Image (cartoon, rainbow, N blue to C red):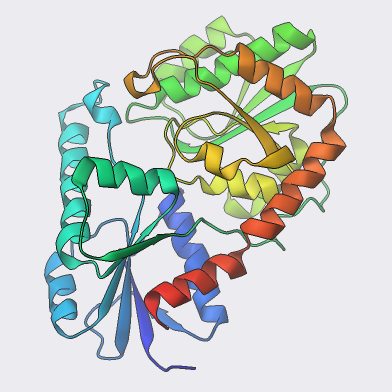
Length: 340
């Protein structure tokens, strides 16, 4: 076992996907005896894993000159700000972040990890090829924490549709309305009580009109501590990843691990992730790159199929996670990419 260390950049906080990934990869690396820190100037630093982008471009350049291997993990490209009025500050921040990501990818990264084939193709089409090597590594999950075993289970008295997003601000209102319209369609199709549980930050200006239009449909849970989230997965019948063109949602993989089937529109990486009876995808039925409203009927039919045979789909979801998305598998792939 090498005594060299790995630097993670930037040091992340919060509830979003990159923060969750950093927590997981740090846990996985340390379980393999790797020293993990956030100082790119340490003399024992053999590799730097840049999670998206960082402001420390000068330190990255200096590390590269010292022979430190730089691996960049790339998410998707910021794009909603060009279609939605998210404010000048958000627009400029999104454009700057894209520039930082592209600069590291083009000039500093020795190796690039894309979260999905979709993400790889998106970057290649938008910013062209680069000289660095690359690969796809899907996100992983701790199968001992995210498990079907636990105190919370589904209710026979209702249909519970679960959505977990870090935030619906910044132009993600279409994502939210897609979830609400799906839940409403399920209520009409089944004539049963349907609960849409929303975990994450939602602006008040979106909550108020939805509550007034869709009475007693949406339950706004807000931000939930990470350790409590598995119970929500176990209590639901279906999971809906709301983000359009998601790179590789941690929540989808966590749902699989808890035995929760996933239904989704076929955008972004979701057709790659949702395979077999772990869930179903359906055509969006409109131009999602322009954030047009979808045609939900095909997705409603897919949901009804899963609801008609929960044991089969729940078993398949867990088996899918065990085969493809364990934390150990992800960690081993990053160890190889970092050359540790």
